[in-house]
Image (cartoon, rainbow, N blue to C red; front, side):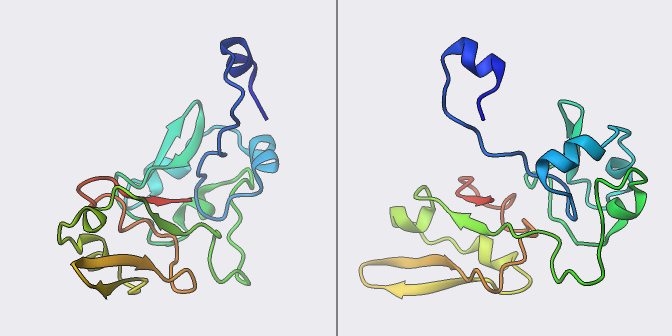
Length: 157
């Protein structure tokens, strides 16, 4: 969906929805339920939840999500709902862009060093350093690999 501001600028590309805190409702339901109180921000132990345009979003450039559940517990409006039956609070996964240093012939494994669940593996290749590969089944979407990347080649979406 294109916003009014985008329409007036002639920007008809739709933008991906913002990355909401873990256990968020679907975007439209979240926007209806969230009161913009900000209670989820100071309670986050890793400080990855920030306020953008009045609503909470996750900024993995600041750190990783530990899935502690404090943000969901602090949300009295019900926009964040920590359900015991959910294995993971969201379906987002890490992705490696073409700007990765290994794809440019430079040895770098810093993203894998920060992945506690070993979802980033490095496959050997001829004529260059190993390439980072994300195991989508193992990736929790915690974002621990995003901030340490020296060229911002890792994103979580």
